[in-house]
Image 1 (spheres, one colour):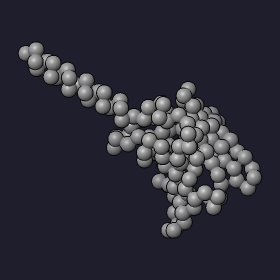
Image 2 (tube, helix red, strand yellow):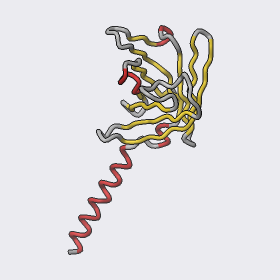
Image 3 (cartoon, one colour):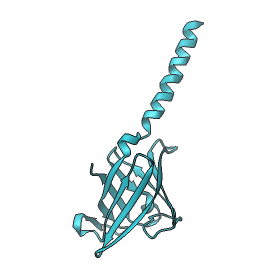
Image 4 (spheres, one colour):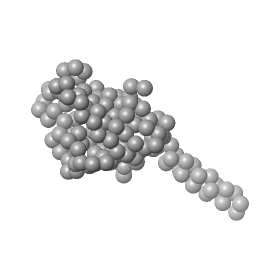
Length: 143
């Protein structure tokens, strides 16, 4: 009987720990993410580097706050708020940005205060804006 309880307890502990490990840790997420690729809904409309219409970055801090900065035609726009990481029902690592106030920098399908992204790797995430005909924006961690 004790062996059965020990086996069941070990299994529960293993499953619980593996679930935690799937969510990107704060230490992994913290940093500066630079926009590296912009792809429109028109085929072959991929832009990278200085060829993009704008340059953009997110700075994610350990206190779950962020700042997003965009430079377009020499004009600098900035927005800030908080973020959280989650795991989707499809077991994908997500990041959700909550803006302090509505902002033109929000790339979203229906909100001017919230946007989401999907981590492709520990250092690359892609905005969910492309799900509703917005551009597919890919960001890479720079530090």
